[in-house]
Image (cartoon, rainbow, N blue to C red; front, side, top):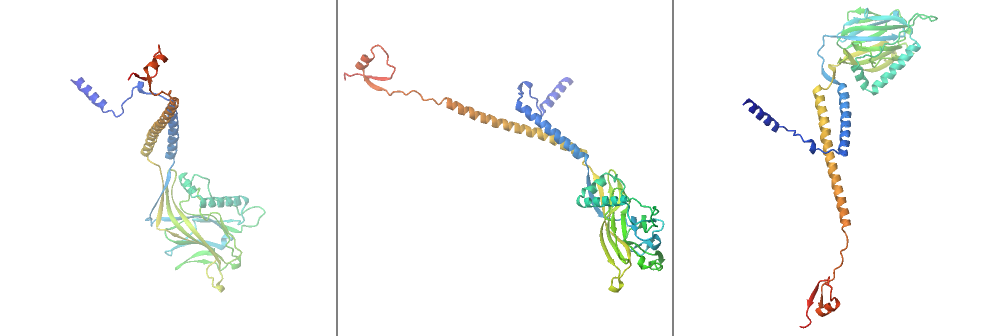
Length: 396
């Protein structure tokens, strides 16, 4: 009984087969079918390879959210060289809330030469070339995100202030990282040391002659957030030279907090755009202010989250199945259509040839004539006439 039920079950399952098998004796191969099969397999291989390459690549996804991390700190990373001695300069930060943040201990001051060495010149030229390329090709920034900033360091070569056969250093290099509140602020370098003040801060520059002012400067690096290698910022490699002793340089910076989360890198950095302005301080002509270098920064309320994504593996399988099935189905339909058109054309050609071969004029037949019987006997006494005749009698 069990065997009978098993046989019936197998029979029912076989009847439900949606892919009936065709006996080999019914299958007929052809050269055209083999050619279509080879082309189909080649096309399938090319498309499958392209899909695998596309699956191995990733895409950058940008999300824009409101920045709610107001209690966190903002890092300012800088490397600025000013054409004045360190004893005559002071640097500090004054934020929007009125807090004055001293740079002592976080920003280092080194006595150097303002004139660049050949190595520094080559580095500056390289940085400007990369910046111009970044302005044209935004995909380079995506490449930096994907590679995890695994490129060469972008720090400028340092020139020592104790070079041979040269006088004492004539410039001061400010470099390091300072943490400030995450609010708008003003980082500046002016003449005189910064001193605390109940209503803010002040710079003690009474002992410095204004004729010795020279705020020509070079910005080797300026960035916000976590210091990461491989990124060229908008102000890197900038150099400003002035002949005026009372020159004010202003940089208005708009910072966009950016969180990078890729397969190779994780960093909280800050992209920024900058607007430059410079003018000469002349109180007699109404141009008031303080000579120096001022970086006025402000933060947007939007945070950009950069994540690296890859298409799901299930989507890859679906695309591969669609490629294989679609090419086989399409190639079969095209092969059948071409075969039908060729057969139709050959049938018409054979029909035209047969009509031409059968187009022969038949032998003309004479119409039946009324011939007298006596005349027929005299003309053909012993032969049977091949022509149809109507025998009539002349006796009537």
